[in-house]
Amino acid sequence: MNIGTRSGRRGITSLLLVAWCLVLSACAPLLGYPKDPEDTDATLSALAPYFNGAKDVEYAHAPPAAKTNIRNEIIFARMRAYDITFADFEKRLYGDGNAVTLGSDLAGLILAGLTATTGNAATKSVLGAASAGVIGAKAAIDKDLYYQKTIPALLAQMEADRLQAKAPIVTGMKVPDEQYPLVQAYIDLDAYKNAGSIPSAINAVNKDAGNAKDDALDTLRTGVFVEDTSGQRLRDYLWPSGVDKPVDKAHLTNLRRWMSANLPAGVPVEALLYGPTLASKRKLAVSDLAVP
Amino acid sequence: MPPCGIWTRKAVPTAKVAEVVAAYRLDNPIRIDKIDNHNGTFDVVATFPPCTDGQANNQPND
Image (tube, chains in turn purple, blue):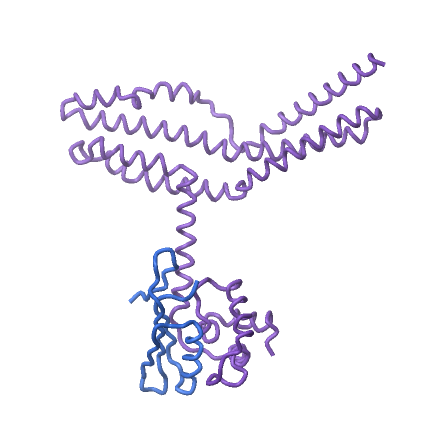
């Protein structure tokens, strides 16, 4: 009995190991990036003098004629280090999400399959529990990785921001040290480093979205008068007895509720009724609100 | 968020000015001006409270 149980446990352990190896081997090509032939850890170690103050001392004591070269050397070294760390960050940001999601999917499927095909009841029970555990863990991880869908957009924003931040540095490197001293370069380098961060990318994306929203409102703000059937029906819906009589408050509430769900915030009712660019929205409002 | 800044409806036929004014009044503007274009139309300008930081910038460009 004991021997049978031990042998069963050994079998389950072997199966789990095989399943895990399959998962690991399946994850490698899912990271989305080729293996880097450069030993970036060694490169970063070699760049340490450009971060620990050693090169700053050399720059400070250098004759004016040599300062520009040392400044550019420091800038190049720092940019190289920031590029390496950003590339690593980018790989992990993109690759780890895939590995977790697909890896746990595969592990869950394998364990569930084994549960169904293994004869022994005890083994079924253990494998079933393991399968549920992996799938449950994946669900929890998915919650933490909800932003995974937005990662490509954030990465694109980060790369655009880095390019933008790189421009003044490259320009500065072409002029003498007196015109672009190392202190100024450090300020620009910090901006370059921070441009590759998620908070910075989110801010930029939100700003773009805000600008687009403002543009949409600006378009609506001024326009020629347009009267169409839908506009007339909405007008009669709001003022069944005529515009010189009180508005139907219940209908106005319904229309405002519809507008808050279908138009940018801050658009007056007038713009919906008579705006030249909102004809399709008027028609939709008439349909959604069953306006007679 | 209520409307802010200035909203303008241009070339409103004289017979429709009252409708446009009534529609603007639903959102409680500070004032409403009617500018006669002398061609049988008016421009109706509704002035709402100024846009503040954090609100969409729908202030006039000009």
